[in-house]
Length: 332
Image (cartoon, rainbow, N blue to C red; front, top):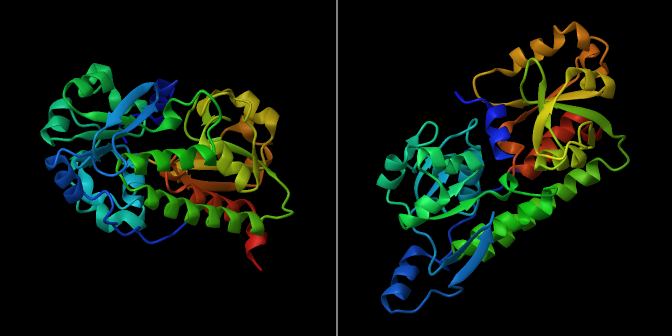
């Protein structure tokens, strides 16, 4: 990515088959209801999201998703046929959603201009990060609302308290409810809960590993704090985030503090233009880190960035990280 992940987040301050489409809440049904002057079943629906109260008279039919985890939430709910566009991946799209994703128009490699966004004729824009609704670029929620476009921001980007699996369930349920397909949310959540429970059983009795997340940074370390879903992923994977006391999803910490915490494992977030190998070398070549157990013994784990944010990959990320932190639990 051309933009810095650190700059983006500072601005903010489990394989299953794609769920098949259901008849309830289909676009054709909405049109029919609208034409008869009646609201579709379950509508109007009013929800307050990140301080913005919105009433939906019918399900969106031409959604645009900005950022990968918002795109993947829509695809996990089987809503690809309701999408008029997508933009801004952090890494490769989840293979489960690749076929559906390939049918959707990519509006821009990063964020589209307001003109390009509106040219897609969306009735709903779903942003993953608050930068998706950058006022200086003309994409602010109020401005889009004035253009007749309803919006939603992933709640991890505006949360005041810790974000965990309950917040993930709420995000999925509210998005599904917005599109008139609440039953799909329950099916997806049931599958996610099953996967999380399976990982928990594997890790029963495992000793927690002290984990330091390295996202990026040279003069300081940009890491995962205690308020984002990344912190819960670590905990559910049998780890303990050494910077859980940082009261934000992401933040900068000094290298001195990294040394003081003596993590057992470094989890590297993989995305964009800096390869994992280069991040490892930056840590291994820093003499100040030489005696940190994770560095000294070259104990690294890797997670794609798209799985460490509030999206459908969370159970998959928990299992993937657990296998790296506690490989012994998976040998039997």
